[in-house]
Length: 237
Image (cartoon, rainbow, N blue to C red; front, top):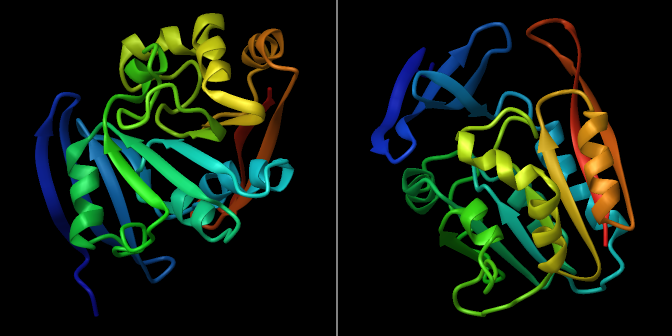
């Protein structure tokens, strides 16, 4: 039997104190990995339906037969894992701000182990996604002005609930225009949100992209014993 609780890592970052914990969820008889930032829950692998949907939905709608994908926010790696499960994907670039998160994948201490690092199509860059979004040269420092077929973002909790107050600017018209600039023709932008659809944010997306929508991702929460709804926003250039 595994330990009921263990802190696997603890480090100080520019965003504050971050820790990786593994705890036994007795109700489900399952080990849960969770990330805590400044004593607040950031993410876990308890329910990953929407993190997977962040990639699976736009990939089904993508016109490119060998797409280049960019992910903002590495996290526990489930969105990236879903991207790489599609063999037609040509490349995956991941932007992650927190160095400890990258190190967990390098050490293989997360549930998916070193899966991402073993795939030659995957490149992880230690950088600030939001800063790069406003940078003229784009997201990839090794390929200036590079464009992507898909940009999938999962960093903040919601368009109006940010890990850092300075991220708020990104979710306005200027930020979305910059995302559009970094997409190839017919490219797609998808955004994860922990909250139900935000119609005001959809209106912003529609002013920038050819079409945009909020896709509800509903799943059964076996802890609360009720359905929960999160959101994936899909925008097409």
